[in-house]
Image (cartoon, rainbow, N blue to C red; front, top):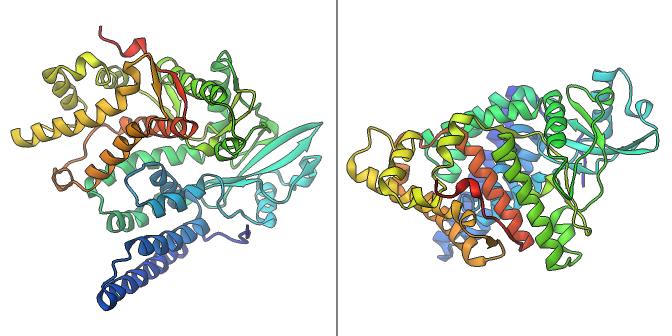
Length: 436
């Protein structure tokens, strides 16, 4: 993959890049409408492919929050056409990497030394590159290490990038402005934390130590002396990313075992630690044939406030789902339904959120659940597609739901997506979500 020798870091440079990308997208629409008029052919799929290619190429050069938002949208099935989802998913671990001289500049800034002088060996080409940083393999004192290096300017450009990308996303994907504002405030908070490698190191150590008793889980050791504000050094963990692992044709028993360990890992974080690895895309996990699961990135962690936790998880209990008055009361408490809503809108929103939450909660209500079920995921994607186009929902006004739910819901559906890819059948019954 071709390396980048520079990243636009100034506000004007980055804004200019967005504008030029908008021009390319406009050109794609012009070709699409011209072809439609001249030949009568409605080639929407080709339009999506062209736009996805141009947008991804542009965001890949910019790195940072813009590319991270694209990555997040790629995980939310149903929001984007397939062409966008597939292209943006590359940002999980296959974005274009930075050239080695830029890596050396980062080391000189924080250590006043080159990586070659700090490590016994340091591979100049990155092993993986994502939206916020890239990973290089290094060796020191007989240990194989992973060195994560943040792209220059990423942390400083978060606010301006989100401000620039907002109208772009609104136009391209026909999203509700108030809902997007609500979403981006939470995204900004998580991105600011994700670019703080000192915070990531502390959380990584804390959560991995707390989860050490979970069977079959593997976490790297971190090295503060070889880490800095924008550099994070940890043990290299062996294993395969999900697609690589599935290509080895593992047994159903192994896939079920890995799925169970992933599920138990998230249940422990959410219900015991009240803080959760909130970036469950395949690039953050390593799967092994012996059934062990490696977790390699705690950059995005959502701390779950106790007050929110106590109210939110009532919604997932079957007795509450079956109690119309209680369910509507909790929807109002969590601002899914607002005091300004008239009776007709309240009834409509009740049906919408009941349908969504019942689907989210379904795995918890049986002893075992088969995440390989195409019917279940057809419902998820169908529902997402249905409500992403729903005019009543778009015009309801107001930001719906608490910000604390944004990353938690995203975490669950990201987890479900990985389990679906594994075709895992696991034990999901949760005593915490049963009737009191």
